[in-house]
Amino acid sequence: MKHTQLISENLRLINYLYNKNLAKELSSIKVNHHFEVLLILAKQKGPITQNKLAELLHVDKSRVVSIVFSLEQRKMLIVKTNPADRRQHYISLSPHALVSIPFIETKIKQVNELANTGISEEKLDTFFEVAEAIMQNLTKKEH
Image (tube, rainbow, N blue to C red; front, side, top):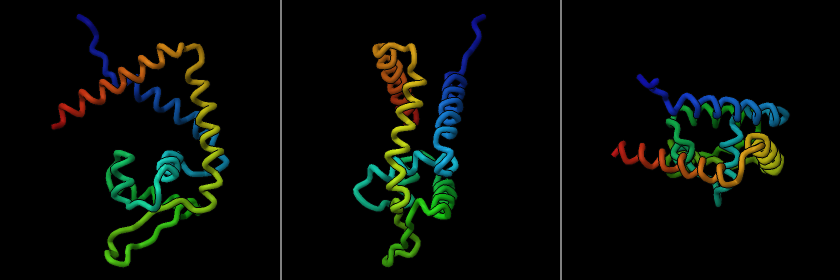
């Protein structure tokens, strides 16, 4: 009988090793593995709500509250309450975080180069195509 393999086992290990390397490279900016939040916010045209950030990160709202609080304490985010709806908070990068974005991007490129070592461009393209197809298939199943 063929062993049943969870796709998530390999993906989880890749995720762990990838993020471990990134965290090591980015340890000087002390954002507790939340560099993805900074990159997402850097791509936005302006402040976004915590709900929108949760959607972009694919995490629940309570998790985003914790992340935002942590990054705000580290002076990486600016959080402003919507005067029209005090329950709604707008999030944007602080000037300190904006200065850190090029450094983060450089370190990500370096870790990507390490991860891609010895893998042809064709195989990488195939990997991303397969990953996208798996995500699409699983998303269809949800509906």
